[in-house]
Length: 393
Image (cartoon, rainbow, N blue to C red; front, top):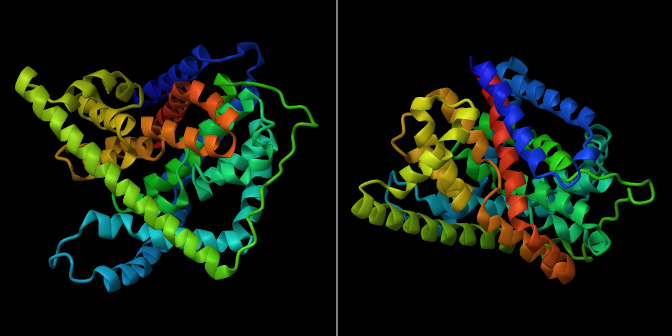
């Protein structure tokens, strides 16, 4: 039965994307079908095979080791701050981002990341029916982050059409930065985090190909990457370390604000209506949870977590999923985990608009005008990835 629901769910997502399409006649269905098949095969590989288990264990071990290294520095600076046996979220989950950010800076400085981003992007462009720029942008967003990626495209930013700009921004919102993947793995099972990263990459191409189809001429299909200003190794390292610390502090501040606001809303709604705000949101999002393959008995609670992610951010929702008293089945936990691994939330609209506007004010205003449509497309990507995973769980 769950296969029928999953197939129906895919058609519902594609239909919702089709409703928002700017040019339905120009939709190329062949690469879309091919990428859905690739998503299913990758899900099977990563979640249901010995090879996939080895890959996931290898990636989880790498990030686990990196987190251990990060904890050496954190213990030196903050050792003794927490009581024995306690595990403060800021110290153990957010501060390791500083070390991961430093590693990304080193890989950028050594030209390893740019080489990988260009190479993988070129390969993907042969599959997805999109241009080299769009393919590079999706991979780069995954590796360096949703705002930093636009710096690498500064040379071309002012020359892009509205259609191509939408695709770049939607890809950035649909993925997550490698710098915070380690943090996700402390709250969710690594196998679901890795699977979501891969599926969202292809899911982003699928949804934008329906919502925002266009044809790129040979003369337009070029990729010009902005080189970073010449810096010494230690200048670069200091910059990336500080950037990582800023991210950790910003995420921490957002968590304090959003979790406190959610608690306040819940309290007010319980006093007035005798039902929490999150439960009301759960009923609103329950139909989406159902088409994702989540059982009816768990749909309201699952919908509540999905709504929390959309209205606040993925960290708040992950904490709710991992620390809440929900008693979800293993299958539902997997489906929800995949849904949560993306930047598809309202705050990301502001982040992306600000990033583009800082580099090109005119294009930033263009992005601001289709901000809600960006969120709509990126949310459909998360739903599609969850449905694909529901096939194999």
